[in-house]
Image (cartoon, rainbow, N blue to C red):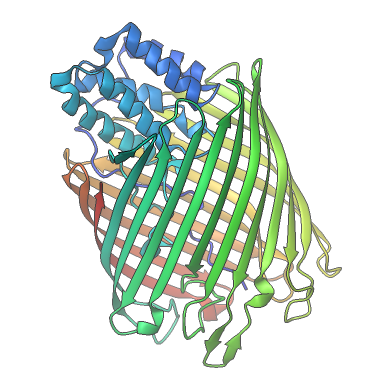
Length: 519
């Protein structure tokens, strides 16, 4: 069986307070500065921040008032989503540099305006956002962290925040019949520790997710997530990345693997990676390797114990990318990497060997037509060869496409499409192709009130099987900023699955009420 994949292929999050509507395009003077900063960003975040300091030193009036500072922040932040590694510290550094250059009597107003603008831009950057609170697992676009000021501790800054909520679920087990409803409370505290060094970077994060059900206490869960990532700036042209994650999570009840469990399926994930980025001439090369280990716990059901141990596996990846960076508007690249799955059991409970190895290869391009219109497109092939002779070899197209468009400063829009080959333990099938098309629009109705709409549709087609799952996820919500660091909100969400295996069909309505506090 498989996990429900209508989770955020792209974890994109909502800004908590957007500016009053204004035109997105910067003034002519800022257009030339945007080009200058964009060219510097090709050499990475350190070069971008250095160039921003140079720009402010040459013309301090760029940070003299909130409007001008906001346009400068927008120009500086535009290239950040292209970086490798944790990006929220880069947004924070941009805000700090601009605020430090503002006149003392206007510094507070400038910082608030810049924070609001960068909040919105970071909302469409997958690398800037944290792991979702547990009650939002499965949501297309959960709310994001804000650019909180944090607490200085030597050469580090500590950023604490906490999210809490109450929500109603009319189908907590995601079943076709005999639906059960309940009210659930949840709380998610989080700490982020980020370095303030001029060179190199270290970011560590720890988050807990606690949920409690009113009537069905066996659904209560305690999850946690920790991560650490370091970037070593060996030279201006060469950076090294090292990182790791460890987490304890549970599968959403929408997963067919967990639908009959008397309690949620708990799993642990451990992930480590290392890589290098080198700039030479007009080119950038990236090389890296990673390992991910997944272990699932067995759970009891009304029909006996569900065996999840045959899903335990390690995934290894190694590969590289070469990109041509001479023109910031269009940067083509080629990418290839090997994928190896090693299951801890040679045979699953149905007698299949699930080990596999494969290659993903193709070409793509990063593009930025204007500061408010950018994207990334990759097209290639995904080949997989399985240890079990009954599965043999399988090749399918691989596509990743992402577009970010801010037509006006009060509106943020993203669209994404992904086609990939996923693992399964469904009897008789080696895997499934997964296609997902989704998007998000958020609009500042007032300076404090933001409206958000999200939608995604997906299809899972199982190889060597007649099974096909169609899924939909649709939601809308509001966020109101009580203060720059306190936000309240509500969401309505509808999810549905229609499968050729009718027993896994379901429809689900959820209503969320939440409050977020950043420190």
